[in-house]
Length: 257
Image (cartoon, rainbow, N blue to C red; front, side):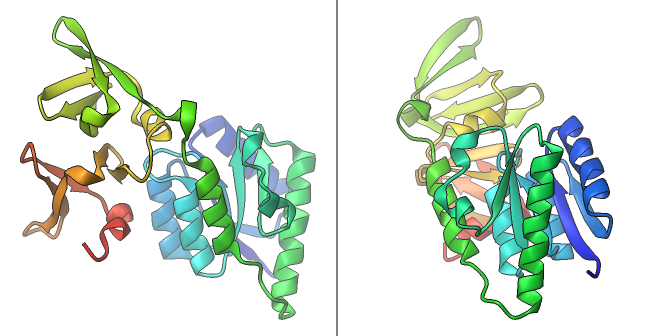
């Protein structure tokens, strides 16, 4: 088989190194066009390199594996997800639309995934119909959307020398600042130590959008998308009148605004 290009995206360094090493042993002709430690870099690499295969962590800082997968699939690529949670193994995986690996990745299981990818690539070369990967991604996104007890309802935050209980309905945006995360409301700011990545996992994605590696905003608080003289984008909020940065991987959210 001719060389196949691949993208690896995993935010945990030991897991990333192990996966790259295992792939080198199991699939010597695989050509790694990018090895990324976060979702933003992975999305940029997917757009630039258009890999035939991508091994993606579902949960990554900045941009999740599903967003990267959409870019890969849009250009005809195949996807294998890595995850620490087996509840993501939905029926679509068993149907063969894509594959998943539980972390830490076992060599035997990776060998199975590689064999399936090789077979899928051969079938494509032979003209076989491709499965509906976009449908799989939509199903996965629905499964991953936090519901019920997984949704954040209250934020316990520091305000000066006191601790304040903030209802999630009060929050306008979260913004990473050094070792803290700023929690902005209409009546003032507070800070928390919880990483932004963990906060995002507990937010309703229909209510809050991540717009930058370090910023998550309530959609209803957005007034408009603006661009400055340097060509950089920002979100102007209604109240308070503040502007948050928007990075390129998230601009697709504002098409039609």
